[in-house]
Image (cartoon, rainbow, N blue to C red; front, side, top):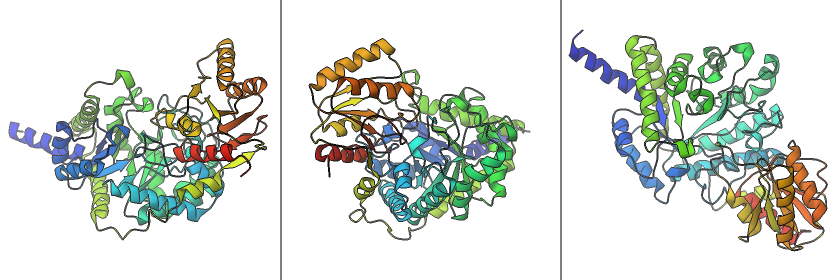
Length: 502
C-alpha cells in the first residue's frame, strides 16, 4: 500500500469518526478546533451551561455554517436540570412535579414548550425526558428528575413528554437505558452495579423505554450501569444490552451518556469507551461537558477529549479492531436524524403566551402539616451539594425562596455533629425570631439532614421545611413539598409562606 493510500485511509477514517462524535466545548463562540471538525463531518455539539448566552441563536447559526447537518443537543430537562436557564433557575416544571400531578396533558404541553424554547436558540435535540423509574429513594443522581417510582405512571408521562417535544420539530432522547432508577451510586463518580432480578428490570425499568419506542422516540441514551446478569460491562459498552434495545424494535439513534463520566473515563478511558461503545451498537458518542473536571480541567479540555475519542476510533479502524461497516451504520443513523430535523417543522404546537408552567407547578406543590402564620421567611439552606448532572450550585433556589434577602448555608455533609450544632445556633440567632424556612432535599433518607430539621425546630419557634427532593413523612414540622430545585418552585414556595393560609 502506498503512502497516498494510507493518507486517503486516514482521511476517510477521520471522517467516519467525526460522523459519530458529539462533543461539548468551552465558551460562547465556535473554537477553531471545533470549526475544523465540523467542516470535516463532525456530527454536532452538545450545549452546556458555559455555552449559554444572549446570542445563543447566533452561536447555533455559526455551528451550522461550518456543519450544515450538525445536530445541536442540549441537556435540558426542566425543573432541577437546566442549561438554558442555568444562571437564573428553571421556569419549567420538573418531572417529579409532573408525575405528582399526573396530568399527561400538562406533561405534553411542557414538552411542547421545551421544544419551542430549544428550537428558538437553534438547537434540535433535547436530552430528555428521563425514563428512569426511581425505585431506590437513596438514588443520588436521578431522584426528582424521574416522573416517579411506578412504571405505569413513568411510562405514560414519558410518552406524553416525547410526543410534546417531537411535535415541535425537535428530537427527544429518553434516558438512561436500561434504567438508572435503582442505583445508589452516581455514575458521574463511580460505576453503579444493579443487583435487581433481571425479571424486575424487564417488568419495571424497561417499561418506559418500550413505551417511548412504541411512541416513535428519535433517540435513546445509554446508562453507565452494570447489570451482572447481563455481563460485567456497563450498558453503554455492552452489546447484549444495546442489542435488547434493537430487539425491542428501536431503529433510531442510540446515544451514549457522557464518556467523560468517571464510570467510563476511569475504567476504559474516553478513547477506549468510544471504540467499545461503537462496537457494542451505539451510534452517537456524547463526549461530555469539558468543565466537569473542575479545577483540574485543562485550558483545552474540550479539544483534548474530542481528539482522544477521535484518534482512538481512527486507530481502531486502521488496525481492524473496529468494523468500518459498524461505524458507517452508526453514522448513517445520525445523518438520517439530522436530515429529518432539517426538514421544515410541522408548525408551532406551543404558544409561549398560552403555556402556564407556573400554574402547573402551583398545582403540583402541596403542604404537609399546617402553615399557621404568614410572613417573609429567613432561609437556611441545608441541601446537599449539587451533582454534576444538575451542573449548578443552584444558589438561585435559596435566593428566590428568600426573596433576595440574605440566606445561611449549613453543609450537612461536611460538618461533624459539634460543628453542625454550632452552625444551627448561629443560623437561629441570625434569624432573630423570624420564621425559618429550612431548605432541604433529602429528608426522606438522610438521617443527618433530618437531624438538622429537628435541631433547628428545637431552637426556633416557627420552622417550615421546604423540600425540593422526594416527599418525606413524619418530619416533625410543616413541609412544603416542592419536588424540584427550580426558580419557579422556590418562588411558589415563598408565595405559600408569605401568604400562609392561601
